[in-house]
Image 1 (cartoon, rainbow, N blue to C red):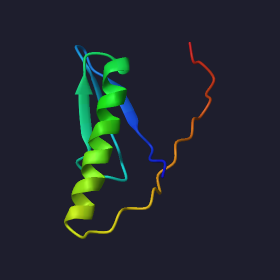
Image 2: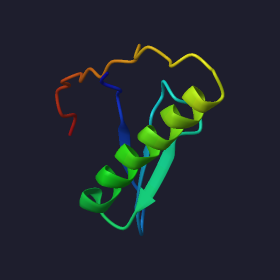
Image 3: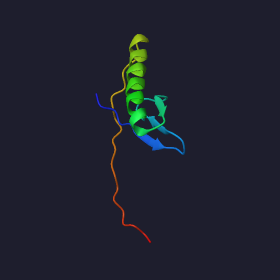
Length: 72
C-alpha cells in the first residue's frame, strides 16, 4: 500500500503525518531524518491495528499541486 505523507517544515524541525492514519506522526531535525521515522511510524501503526484485530485503512488521500501565477 502507498499512503500520502505530509511533511511540514517548522522553525527548528520537520513534522510528518499521514492523513489516512490519524495520529500517525513523526518529528525530526531535517527532512532526511523525518522520512525514515514516518515510515517506521506507519509500520508500527499498522502493526498495532493488526494486533488489535482492526481493519487496515485503505489509502484514500492523494496529493495534487496547484500551479499559480506569482503575484507581485
